[in-house]
Length: 381
Image 1 (cartoon, rainbow, N blue to C red):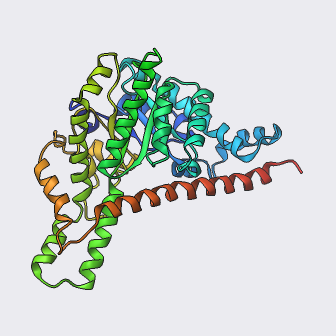
Image 2 (image 1 turned 30 degrees about the vertical axis):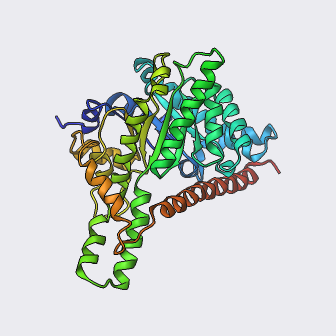
Image 3 (image 1 turned 180 degrees about the horizontal axis):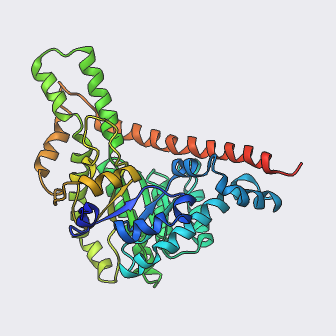
């Protein structure tokens, strides 16, 4: 019998969630099978995933027609489709949620990416999504923008589970963790229970390496002055995202040892786990499971697209590596400042956040357009 390495990872305190959702896998029983046999214990979704799931999929036509007959606007029809899938996925994962005492079993849905820079709109939509989906194990995704963090704090204070997404820099993760803590503290001050609230911080990986590798390749293509400079550039290729994640985990440990966190933990608060996101390898020269193998460690989640789930089940090399080579990780990040390398990591992270929001806005708008077209086709003349 072949070993399912995904199940081995659980022994190291890391949960595996799937970065994909569609009605096909819900209705075919595939999702139930992944949960019961492969050890998948959570789902993350985003506008790109829903565009792939819904566009050109006849499975949704009946519900679209029902929305048309009810006179619903396009965005309400979109929500009716997506909310149904999220509720059904939540129900499939409910046993995991109960068995893990609310640690796992969550399904994440993102507020519209078009409001990523609007605090009040993000709060209002997070509140509405949570109420309308009406499942204890739904998590509302809010981007970790400057405007997003006050929304996170408010949502947590109201008892809404939050997945803070599009985190790239270590500082953005630290800011996110304290927004969660402030939200819990506010809730405690209101005399409310904090033991049933969950939050995760989704830290993106492959996009960092893609960006920095692109800069390195451009420098090498242009030509460098000496072999030493070339060696320095090649040494950091494909290494920055993992180093960055290892440093973020060290910050996580500092935060959970702080007095403020300990006071909340004593009242039953759940730790805000780091989620490793954007984990499909973009460069074919890299291992297809490198963002899994290198970041296995306790109190974390890795969210994998279906192809990476299959690859990992087959050939992940499972060992606890999240706290190995930490000093090298700090040195690697410091080496970006070397004049021969000269990559401004803060500028890269800012660039990635802007790009990240754009990468969600475009498929969201594309999905709205394709829905508009389908509504026209299905509308009675």
